[in-house]
Image 1 (cartoon, rainbow, N blue to C red):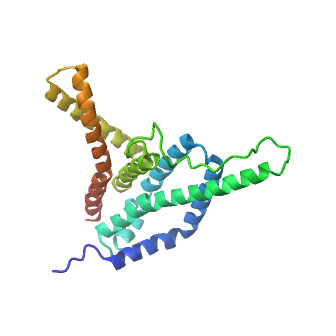
Image 2: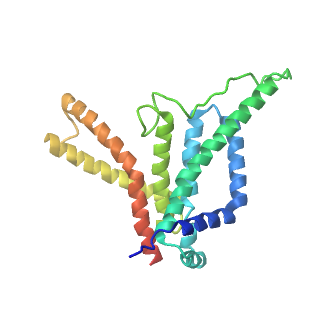
Image 3: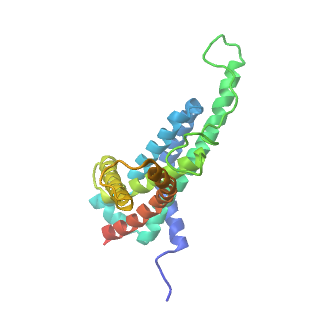
Length: 254
């Protein structure tokens, strides 16, 4: 029996629909981002939060039309399955958005460095510009790379953190009708408290303690194992929230 849950042609049409409706805003948005990167190209401490915050705002608005009575009916009448619509949502909010951020960062960095050095060499008697080498502060390695990643690789850490944030706020855009950004943030904080509570209970059961004070040796051993387990869990968070998003979108459509 042939399945009709996933069809490549319908996926292509969904992508075409998205970009046909948003082509001008997309061009304008990415042009603005490139200009922003031109000025803040060497400020990793500022760019990383910028990418993450702009990303979750983008994701939190992706499914906003399904929470509107008129637009929602039109959206659910589109001849495509929930899985296909979710795949488009995941691809655009996570992989497309992150790729475009890296492309605009690269272009902004190249153009910003070129213009800066050109103006610095013009001897305008202005102390604003000085020659600086081309730097790629979002890539490479750091002692403090971020939440997750491979070792201290900044790029993988940024990508992993970005995917988690996007998956959470994509689910929020399906789940909440109003104040999506704020309500999703509050719900995620509650989720973290719940997970932390379970982790504390598990540690107490493993080491037979009834307080937060652990023996130094036991805590060190747990830290080595727990760190690896935590990294695996962090990488699995995005797929987990995508699966939850699928069931929530199915429920919405029904």
